[in-house]
Length: 134
Length: 135
Image 1 (tube, helix red, strand yellow):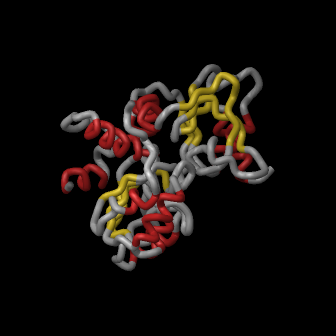
Image 2 (image 1 turned 180 degrees about the vertical axis):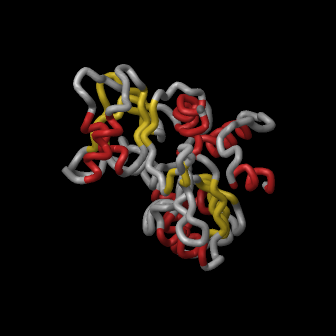
Image 3 (image 1 turned 90 degrees about the horizontal axis):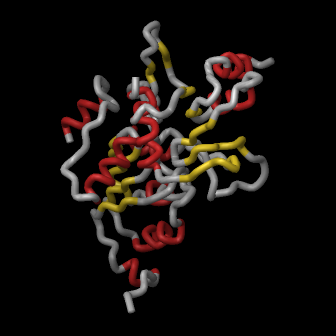
């Protein structure tokens, strides 16, 4: 197993049955592949969807994409809404678990997420809202 | 009989002016009206301020305007997927204001809804708080 899969599988152990879960772009999306037995969760895509399904292969579908721009499916129970409402779910504390990518983590769980000063400035996207409800 | 919501591209182009601020929909170019972006590129208007979720992609969405040198300032939450934004920013040819996407969308909604502002915890204790005070 590659290191990314090991990390994703370990992160998936943090999910509890019935959680609303936000997966960040990149490695966190692999967590969906490692749900433990008996654990059912609903995945949120921060751009405006609950009931996010797996990324799809094949031609890009502009109508259903995750926050990272990848085409995805939607579960039968899923819902689409605008980004304002999506961040009401996030900022209002209705998302139980976030799996976030980061540039650096310290021993207290603070993360460096959006900038290496002078070198790399990807921007924070939804990450600051995702950590703000704690 | 209400007026039609439809207009022509030619009428749209008449609205474009140098230095104007344009808010553009789309997430990493999905949902961005490419035909309208092309019209803005064709018009040649410059010194634009753009508001978008992100920096687009190098030759798609608002990325076309950035690559064409028509943008003075970009207000967005995430620019890491457009290296041209990064390059122009580092050369001092593009000003970028980064705002957490939850805050940016609520700012837009609040203004449109006639509210004086919003209170949010997001970004407290980070550079984002200082930037917000500066603006």
